[in-house]
Image (tube, rainbow, N blue to C red; front, side, top):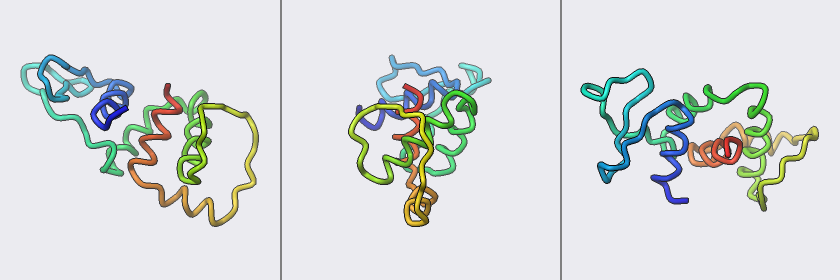
Length: 116
């Protein structure tokens, strides 16, 4: 999946309406009006504030645990597939520090894995 496709997946999950006929990923924001609100997609892969706003749309009961599972493995660098295991982790201080300092791209990858 390329960067634009990732941004579109995240935007659609957040309620944006994407118009793919324009060639570039322009879209209508949630609660927006086509005539006045046509705008560029947020830069979820490079802007930590944008992806943190997107994370607020995750269902806290269904996908929040999955998001943290994938963020753990994305920041650890050992994600070898989309296997969801319902288990508790004994996270070291070192690993917790890596998760807290995760980049916008790492958050976006975990978001997509948890959502799909």
